[in-house]
View 1 (cartoon, helix red, strand yellow):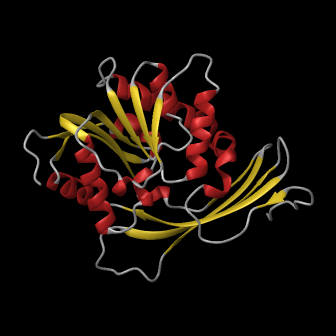
View 2: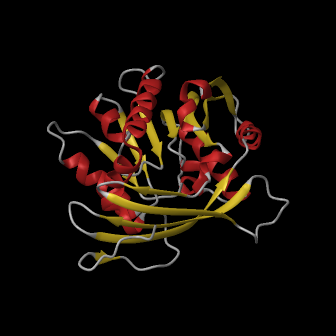
Length: 267
């Protein structure tokens, strides 16, 4: 089935962009339309998991915070939340949504990649979930991201991370009353076979049907990282897996871990 014509809607330009820049204002609409109850369940399950570890008033850094799906409800609960998000348009959505809250909430923000974040051990909990790590696509970037997450945490601080299974990297089409979405995920034939994991290109064309017509295109690299590789690199920066939650998150087709920053962390 081909995408419906878009005679009146706006069109975003093609090209390789920072992920989600071209459709940040539609991000929540698209994900709710395509994944609905599953995404709502995943959000609630993730929040409940954080609540099992985070004490009242804890400082939480949310890496790849997006439009605030976790940051905003955590701030509502009284946690001190810092949102790190590389996409300016996505971060703008988070700020706008938090400003519309009935009761004021305080979320500080940084427009940065994970690996560019400079932490000083001030956070109790770090989050890197909702497939955020797939946007880190080289070994140096992965190492830098894990180091940045470790540096952000105090000794004994905790990191919740998810690592999508290979099954997540499959093309799909979604046709709902609100959106028509075609996602093509293809393996990158140019990648060095010596690199761990597998590189892909994510290519999406979507038509928003309601509340008014809008078409966008998004294209960017992503990478599957084997859990054993992430565990090995994380340990080099003082992050040790203390709990495997994968069975509790089986519908998400991902490995879920709590990692703890060790008291004596390698420099």
